[in-house]
Image 1 (cartoon, one colour):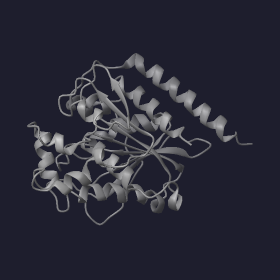
Image 2: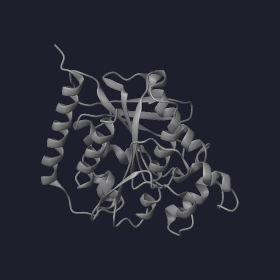
Image 3: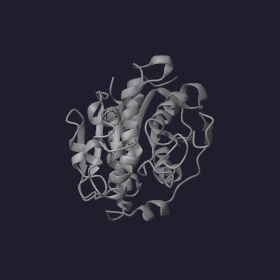
Image 4: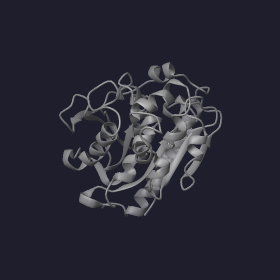
Length: 288
């Protein structure tokens, strides 16, 4: 006999809380570098699914351990300044850890700067199509009524944008409960005014400066959009690539600061940011 849904949810919450607490004993010192993220342990993805004809239009799936009921889905959008040089492979350690914690992880690749169709709006449209493709591709043992979008850095901008662009709750069998930005870029007008390499890439991503293509900045910036009620922004307070002010730019979102974290701690599964992400995912999934 199956357990009632509320009891199942409680058991899942308790198990993931326990996992996050035990993981803390193995946490690495923050902040970590991108090379340390690449060196972190990861498991191979369970499958790869094409959602379009272009070479970069596919998604990788990490399955949760076999359970009695379908697992909630995390659509995990990688960052990398929208540049072709950074692909979905670097998010594998985080995807693997989330799968081990009981989530199915759907990690889309998308067209990026340096390949045909990359940039605005192609990169964003790819992520949106990849989310919607969950309905048609139908990987087994996932619960399409419990979906959370999450994205890191430039991928945070794309995930937040996609959450605002999706149709109403539960349409066509897919229900996104909310969205989590991990060191997400939220205000492109402000971000593109900076001079680090990622900020300069924002100008390329949008096809010009704010005074040249103001409509692009307004349409792409999560700060200007109507986001889901359950929107959480996780951010480190020593992030040199995406300043904390980017998390502060969306007053309607819940901001959670990870003390001592830099930019890449948010995607390293052995830092204090990982249990914070697990808690955030549970909090979003508990939304009615």
